[in-house]
Length: 289
Ligand code: NAD
Image (cartoon, rainbow, N blue to C red; front, side):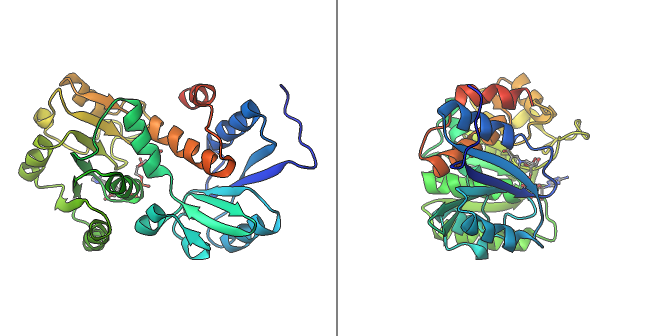
């Protein structure tokens, strides 16, 4: 059925810079169309300088809400009327829901990742996971995993200028959940091996291995991978990083970041519309993007 824009059509915006490459408008508009929801999703290329006005427009234009990506995810936090529990802990948002001018900020990256685990049949609740990286994607995953009931998370990051700040942040997340979270230097291979041995899941949440540097890997010793370990990467270009290739060669169950991308969008769609995203309709759009 061809989409008709009417006097009733509502708007959802995507505020980020750069943004023209994004697959989100294709996904969200296909889902609106499939379910006959009278709404459109449009990308607006803007950074933090115009973010306050853009967010005020959500109220003024009675938009359903918005998605945010870099560089706006943290800058939008103080502009919200309310924050979800996860957004408070992460300190960043990627989704805004407008209810009669009252704006609530959510972060759906973590729920997206947790749903992608479920999709692949990986059971981690009450278990232990090891995650490499402590940036935006990693923090969203760590917070949601902790809120969902993962008991123990070992975080490995390079010892850069952010290391001490990351330590404080993770202590704050641990203090506000039932999860034990530790931070270690990624250079400590012995400790990493020990943590992976006791984990059901290993995640790369850094950009290491992304195009164009596709031969780079976040770990060097792949003998720590075993067949009953699930190994996930947040990267989706390339579809199979060298990290995943090496893990698969050792018999591990592997998955790339496409599931996280798909389900963070699905969670946002569900927040705006109250309806489940038609996954079968949008999955091929993501896979072929
Ligand atoms: P970020 O800059 O916030 O964090 C990057 C992290 O990687 C930091 O912990 C940093 O210390 C670490 N890192 C960077 N270079 C490293 C190196 N050479 N060795 C070891 N560690 C290194 O970035 P981000 O927003 O968290 O994004 C990280 C990756 O996640 C990117 O590849 C991004 O495309 C991907 N991502 C995927 C999704 C998805 O839906 N699948 C969502 C968000 C981000």
